[in-house]
Image (tube, rainbow, N blue to C red; front, side, top):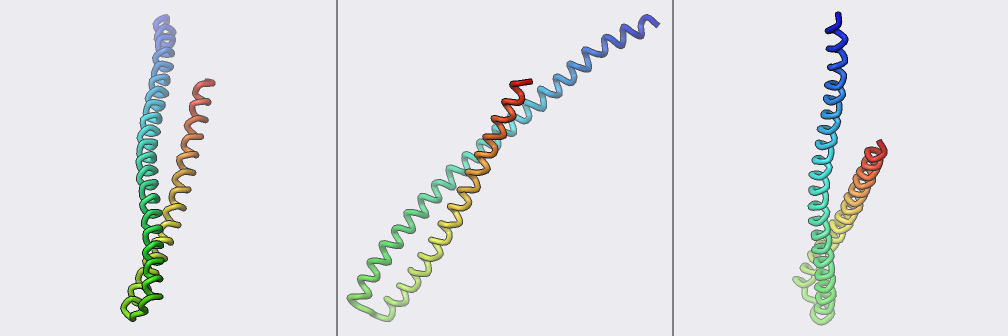
Length: 130
């Protein structure tokens, strides 16, 4: 009977060490996943920003070409020029629409990034106060 209480008291530290190990493992996994997601989001954000800049450049170039084409149309209103003017105008509308979609996506990615950052700060604060 004496050996039974000794075994019981010896088991308690092992259980708390196991719980501590599980908590440390969970924290390490959470930090690793957070780091991975953060890297992926930053990479995506960078590529989305580059795409937005490219779209803005494309839009300005199409606008410039449209102005030049309008000038050509004033000087020589030939039927084939009118056809290409309509095509360029259609491309301009599509690029402008795509640019709007990309800006909307960028805002969403920024919101997700901000929410993740706030969540990480909140999690660190909760972990630090424990």
